[in-house]
Amino acid sequence: MVLVFLGSTAAHVAVTVHAGTINVPGDYPTIQAAINAANPGDTVLVAARTYHELVSLNKTVHLVGSSSQTTILDGQGTGTVVTVTATAASISGFTIQGADQGGNAVGLVHVNNVSITDNTISSDIASSRPSGAGVDLYRSNFTLVDRNLFTHNLYGVNMTRSSNNRISNNRMVDSTLVGVEVVDSNRNLVFQNRFENGEEGIDLTGSLTGLNNFTRNVFRGLSLMGVFLVDRPSGNMFVENTFELDHWSVNEQNVTVGNTFYHNSFLRSGLRHVNHVFPGDGMLDVWDNRSIAGSGPKGGNYWDDYAGVDSDGDGIGNTNLPADGVDSLPLMVPFVPVPIAVVGVTASPMSGSSPLTVSFQVDVLGSLKPFGYAWNFSDGSALDFSSSPTHVFSSPGNYNVLVSVKDSSGSVDSGSVVVNVVQSSSSLGYLPYLVALVVGLGLVGLLYYRRRRRKRQREEEKEGVERKRRS
Image 1 (cartoon, one colour):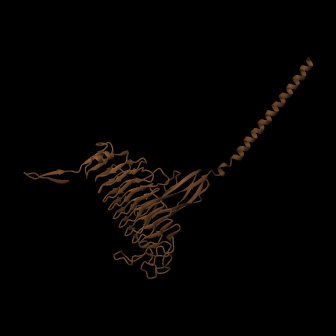
Image 2 (tube, rainbow, N blue to C red; image 1 turned 45 degrees about the vertical axis):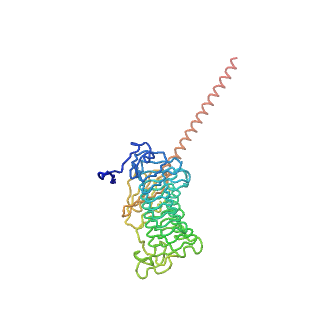
Image 3 (tube, rainbow, N blue to C red; image 1 turned 180 degrees about the vertical axis):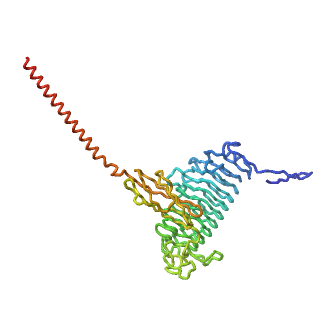
């Protein structure tokens, strides 16, 4: 509410002006028409349906969809789906998809204090390798990108020459190749995001990329690396992150300087936890918090392959240093809880004839124990809640055995394995007798047929002789 004072020679009159609400399609048939009609501060409420249009958010308007599952804004491959050029605008509650080749789902250009929350964002759902960003920030500052789901993007969030942005509580999954790209940008906070099953979690590029903070993110199952630092980014902080099941956890190239890593956990990297592409890469980086005032308990990082000993009981390893070639104060246990991850499910044996008895094991990462298990054998039997069950498959078939594992926080992850069961040879034991019977009956029939035919031939011969005698 804004109070506007109108001057007059007689008196000052206070007029109350309320920010309005515009409904789509109730008041206007398209989102852009509603924005065009809106005043700064208005809210545009968008009902559930699919809208095929490109939107220019060029006023300080709050664009609110009914639900990200049901309110879909589709650019149909014709351009950037939402372009934001107004300070303090916001967009929430949409699925935003279908940018043009190399285009962005949401683009911010020279704008500040924009809020992008609670959306599902996909620049390109059709391509096997997307080429655009979910949210692209160019010279845009103080942006909030929070609680979004990013799928099918080259970059979930791409920041170029932008600062003081907060990227938090998002999930980057399903063919989002790089979660957050940071190019010549500084003083940004990337906090409590999940980067799963893409190629890279976070890329930091350029000598102007500095003083960024990356805290409590999860980097899981990334085919290349969790974090990539290239071309001299400096002064960035990586704190309390969890790296699990990545090819490389951290990869550094072209002399990164003064970046600090502490209280992170490195678990089950496919090749190695830390990789330096060239000699000298990462030499000036710091792998503990000794030099940082007020940063909590002294220590470095947790490494699952560290084989040293804590000889004085302070929770920090004292032998076989530095851990993984970089850490002189390795932690003996993870500093923050390790989120649950089902690494794999095994069945022994995986195939055989019925009835088949199979033993199952599940490999689980996570520190929030005890775990709870639920096995579904997909054969109509009841769920099994043991950690390593044995099950008998009575009938032939391919069974997709599923296991869900829950940790003490209530988080759940799952895995599966296929068991192939074929018909038992013992159940086919009657077949030789049946075959013999059929063959025997066939032979009897054949002999009978031949005997009847020969008898008929003899009778015909007699009749022929008798006819000749009479003639």
